[in-house]
Amino acid sequence: MTGTFLLAALLAVPYCPEPPRDALVIGHRGSGASSAENAHAENTLPSMLHALDAGADMVELDAQLTADGVPVLMHDFTLQKTTDLHGCLAERTYAELATADASLGSGAAAASIPTLREVLDAVAARDAGAINIELKVNTGGACPVTDLDALAAAVASEVLAAGMRERVVYSSFSWEMLEAMLQEDADAKVAFLTTTGGEELTALQQEAADAGFYGLNPIYFVVSEDEDTWRGLLLDGARLSPWTVNDRPTMRRLFAGGVYGLITDHVADAIEERAAADAEHACSTAGDVTVEEEVGCSSAGGASGWLLMASALWLTLRRLRRHPAAR
Image (cartoon, rainbow, N blue to C red):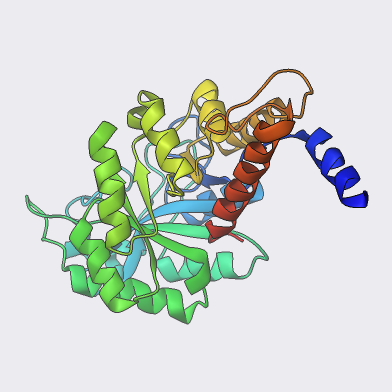
């Protein structure tokens, strides 16, 4: 009798499938790419700390090696876009770069080119916050070709020395670079940057999983324009962190869909949209819901109630497999 009562109570309980709430807000180059409106120059220490102070869970930065093997922050392979120096970064020693002003193109005061270690130490001193290190790979042109093994070894060494191994994800457009990083540290979390969409993205996700990669970071419009594909990948447990998402409607839609992370120049906007996406999924007793939508609320009854509860258990187990580096 008691069992029958409990069963009836269970079937009468509204099932409210909630969206994943652990999506990471990731500050692109810190508080955003350099612009006249940005008070902090990209890839500088003040920019990284400002993004974290604003509530970012993670900051994304670009790393490459100086001529004497020091990992520093810089997006371009040449210096003239964001500094008062010219020529290839890889042809300059760190001592030469240390006097440069890296604030060009921004609304910031003068700022130096930081070493990766400086940023790692500053973030390590905080209770929370993680780093996505994009490993920059030059394959030709006027500047030296990147030595993949040297970059992997130097960066991994600095991460380990700073005690940040569990709070770092490595990303790159170079598959070989990520393989080199895994050779250096078999447990490293690596994510492949891509502009691939549609069925090719699905195939790429499988290849990345087979290679031991942690996730994929696709350009935002390939996931925004092909909702069925990216929602399907997310339901399969893929870790997708689209870049660079700066408009609010797209932010909200991606957060509602359950992306692992979202890379943006506008951290404050992303935090607001993440909260709004959660609020929109607040439980309502009206209407039915599909597992694929993961939104709304329905009164679970009969066989459909058991299906929904089983789906809820599956979704919960899937989310437990997600292990944000920022946590």
